[in-house]
Image (cartoon, rainbow, N blue to C red):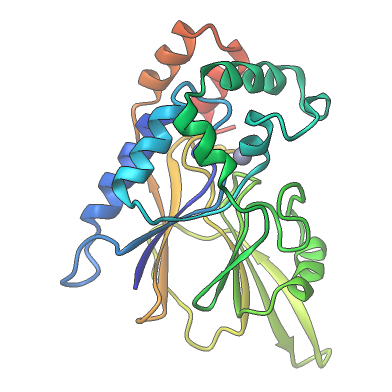
Length: 258
Ligand code: ZN
């Protein structure tokens, strides 16, 4: 199966459209496109098109695999938004006011526990704490390897594409965890890999100083994957945010990928 893995779309429709177009045209060596979409959460929040993004995702793959993110929870009033910074809080309130009933039902239906699909565990933040934990270090990643049973785990939440590998270290004769910043557009083979935690980065609000939308393609039969970056019309999203009078700092940051 060829899988398009997306996370943290954050209501950025222009970025989502570009990712879907890029993944649809992707040439796997004879075959094009993808068979399934796996969405790791935070489809809403920050951006100006929450309803449109949910509908676009449903149209692209009605049976897409999906889990809840912290912003998906916040939009339903399931989280205390005092934990959010003032701009994020303003965005939560705006999203709550602008969600239609279909979107609200969609968000309400999102599972908040990790899912097992093929050799992958699918979750938003981490397998240990699916909604909130940020896997930002090898220490946190190492601890989380004990919280899932499949060989691989897919997480989002940090908005930074990352790969953590758990492997036997011949020198120390122990399992050790290493972190890697994946290079886009290189085939990464899963053959011989034992355990990985993979983060596809963010479609709608990348935070690694690269404004391009980030996502991951996996061919589970060929056991190969590819991180991808794709340019999208940032100014279109910014214009819609300005028209909705969203916070200026949030409008500015998507141009920098931060
Ligand atoms: Zn997010």
